[in-house]
Image (cartoon, rainbow, N blue to C red; front, side):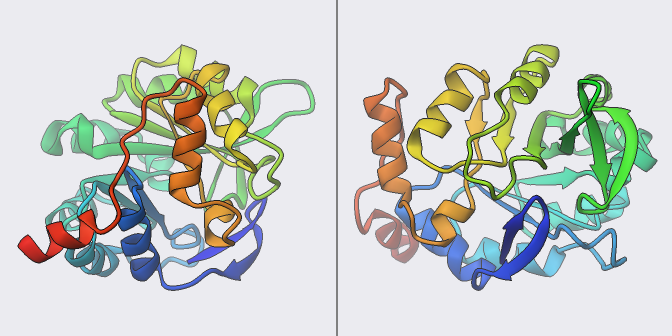
Length: 249
């Protein structure tokens, strides 16, 4: 597991399977595992990781990275992943979205959009772990991806990633209002109020949190309590419940 700032200066944050297990037990609703440099470094999909996670985690999880074919998507789902995230491959092969959505169901297909602000307004889509600009407008791409069958958008602000300055509310709102599927806001969480703002003002359906958890600034329980106090119903997990479920399973 790594975490950086604006997709650069990545630092080791621990073993992904162990952290996934820990966050699951602490009350996370979903987990997302992305090999952000798989496409750039031409590595195979993270099927082995999905197998390991499925043995330890009992909440929905998404895997992504190097998913460049329907067969790769199939193998990840068979390995235990609930959803598969497509990014670089979806942009180079848009038909892959439609094919996978028809074959496996839209609910399994997440389109990850890494976007950076343009000086003249709007946002550009980047691929290959944020290394290559496409010149494609993020809102336009979100619309096309969902029209092709994507069931969810994982939206990351490259400008906000790792900065702890809050989610890009303008970007999140623009995408959320442009599509009729769930949008997960990512990039910039620094405190509980940022999560609330992303949902209330950015109209996100969910929020992704990484650095502030990995570095111990907050726990999932603390974030959920804060959101619940701000008016958002939360699924709370009693201590030890996940362990009990695993033992009974």
